[in-house]
Image 1 (cartoon, rainbow, N blue to C red):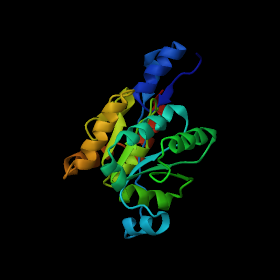
Image 2: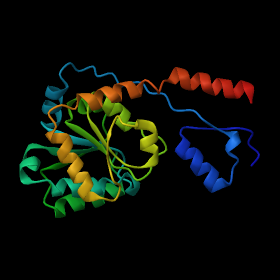
Image 3: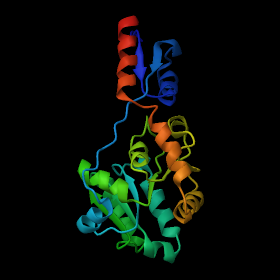
Length: 231
């Protein structure tokens, strides 16, 4: 109410602020986050991941297992993949474990997927970079995000990406990723099949490489400074 200027990270969150707090749109400025690729210091990421985690071909997702991250839906879609695909690929879930992880681990046990789905817990930056680089596919099925960094990280490591078709991801990623209809488990399964069966994801990856250039900390800092000195 008394704030002269609000800086936020996306037009989607701007819309939320206006909706929840009855705030004037004129006092809200959207300044996108910057992005810097995590440097991968390991020359052969695939071999490093094989030696440390015993992962060969795998689908990667990342994030604390809170319900809005929608990892349950990804697990169920993975379960719907045919035996041939499940035999070739694992699903790797990275992120600090919490009480919600226990629910997901019980689900995996009930589905008989304990040897197909791995929960790594906390991952160091170096290990995460190698996992991004070695993954065959990155899936980020969130129901809500304010921005969503992990797909940018995956794109920066030349990994094809599937995300939920929610407004924030359309805003941040445009046509640089594949989308599935949120709440449609069948559609997610189909998109996973499509991504894994593609012989060439280079067009998608090239679009992602260009998209990343929109998000720099230099630009972000300059825009924040302008707002501070000119409000």
